[in-house]
Image (cartoon, rainbow, N blue to C red; front, top):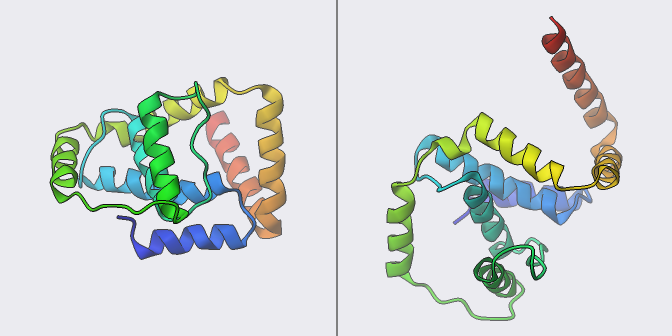
Length: 167
């Protein structure tokens, strides 16, 4: 269950005109924090991200399920269920025993899947599957929705990173 703070951040992103995937990013970030704090683990980084996306869908972020062939049928079905539940298309049922079993399994999974190195590796792999044009378009859109102060902060951060890498 996402906390109120996460839902509020996602709503703020929506008001700022950011994309549904950016809104969902707040839930993914919260999930990574949970793993880092040791509340539970994840089999791999993809699973940690998938849990966050599922929570986002259930919380009402307009993030449609993946297209056929992009993920396994099981993942798609789960995403469709979460999406439909948030849109009020179907009634959800609480399943305490299943929830408890899932939590017990996650508690035994590794925490290293939310490390900086693991997330960096996942990000690079995901980016490498996209075309240069697609990555460039995403960067242009990000710059548009960032605002003046955001762009300035990002530029300063980039300059600091470059300076650190050089020296």
